[in-house]
Length: 299
Length: 316
View (cartoon, rainbow over the protein chains, first blue to last red):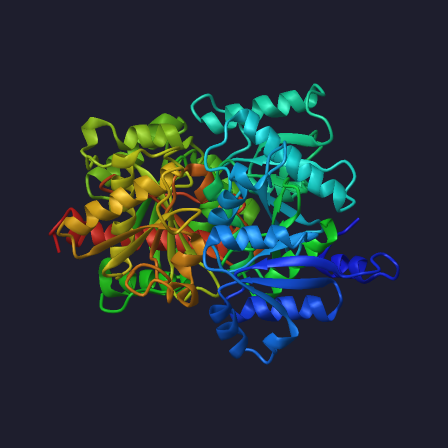
């Protein structure tokens, strides 16, 4: 079971696991932090990158680093469509988003002409390793689904549970977050979450244990949950999946965590025909590298 | 006030300076048989920040104070066994100018606010009642007021304007001018498939046209764009990006969850206050640290001073 980004890297570097570096199409790596993260992953033979986008902008980013563009395969393109087509034509094992807003990138991939999204749902999952929390936090969905009804929320949770499974997390646990753990008819989010939790209790949702509504405090602490009368929750205090009530909440919480709490993070679009590393544009070089690790691991 | 207050320590010391200047505030507690409230007020009183009158069950108040080692000899107790009566008396004291801040004790927030808004007391402002959490986040160069994570579940467009007004009052009481308000988003641009981005854009335009130089509103802005000066260089013309005083979110959940992620995983200190009546309403919770509690009552005192002298007063 992968509990940290260090463990993820270790798994990728383990002898015999992967005889060859995974072919990786990198879209628009036009800032130095992308170049550095890619170089690091390439040097460790985790990925074999092909850089795609405006060659001029990519070279400009290289100029601000100590890396040599001549050591990389670069394909020059001049529109988002061309870039994506070129990326998919490489027959990569995974793709990596560069300097494009996460939502724009996701919406381009969802365009049916690329046949990228497959038959299921594609969601954005922010993976956070927080100081003081034993598990990886899968925060979702902060970029793709702007408006999610109950059935979409269930799909978002199931997609995150699928990712959790691939990370070796057995019986993943999902909390549906709200401002409070009490259920109030006047607060629609709590009613919807309670109903989904009831579906989970009755075995209607397979592969993941779901509880909600849970406040953030209860989700991360069994002690707080007990004090609030939730001693019977099978989820509180051991949450893997933080299913947020809105896209803005997932996005803001991920960013608060990585900007101000010293947490490491990674972003991934999960559910397409290929894993797509999707850090937010403000993510650090470390978090971009972590996102690449995650995509390579899944690829 | 000349310089803007930038940290929770400065909030507490400003309230103390206010008290030392002869304008010490009186806090009226509704249903004071609450160990956390007694402890916070006893400590704030010992620090010279405020005076307090405890409306509630005197016997229980003394017992709780004793059990928790809170020194309440300098606080006034008004004995009312019935919680409704204690609440009524505390609010009455504020409405008659005998108290500057109303504090929630062992009573439900909803019943306290119902009393505060009762017509008899004349404490309504016409604005919505909302909760403002002022966060002192290590790593951010100023205070960040987030709203609303406690009262207004899903504000509509008009309610958002009232939330902006309420949060701006708190910032102005902290000496912040102009107040920079970021409207939250998961994206920094307008996308017709994201309803919140359309509303944020329309509010931004409305405030840009309104002649209100003290409040600058911009959105949608992601949390990082609102609070990271490094990221904000990408949109240099945006006066709020990277320097927000207020992060106005779209739902109670969004505010509550983002604030709690910061409070639980960093040394963020927060001060909360209920705004929208003519008297600030202070509340602390059991899980707050003593510093949170002190910052909360301090901000209520500063707000009360601002209300008296500028916002609703002129009695200065």
